[in-house]
Figure 1 (cartoon, rainbow, N blue to C red):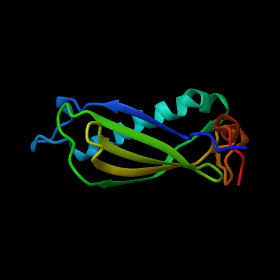
Figure 2: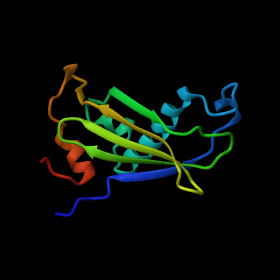
Figure 3: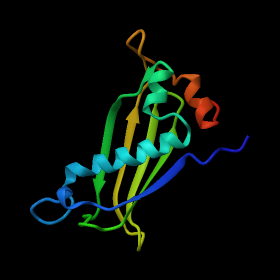
Length: 140
């Protein structure tokens, strides 16, 4: 079985209200860009947040890391690429935010989410099979 493409990219442009007094994107807005890309990625597999809830699992983010390489600017066309890199015991998504025109990397990041059985309120140490089914992957 070949590994499916577990990535998705979106394009966005920072709005004026995303800027700080130095006229660059305020660092606190980058997680919003990651979230937009994560939602698009999960929707690609028909496992967005409502589908997660309907399957009985919450997927809280338990870790997020960002490495700011260069600043993004007002109205700059950005490409935000999200890729699922782990799915066995946790859902880890790597991100790269780059300038859409030049490909220059602006930010690297990742998030880690864990499955929580909503009925029991318990964190799972192995991702539920519904995730693997939706992604078209098998556990390692």
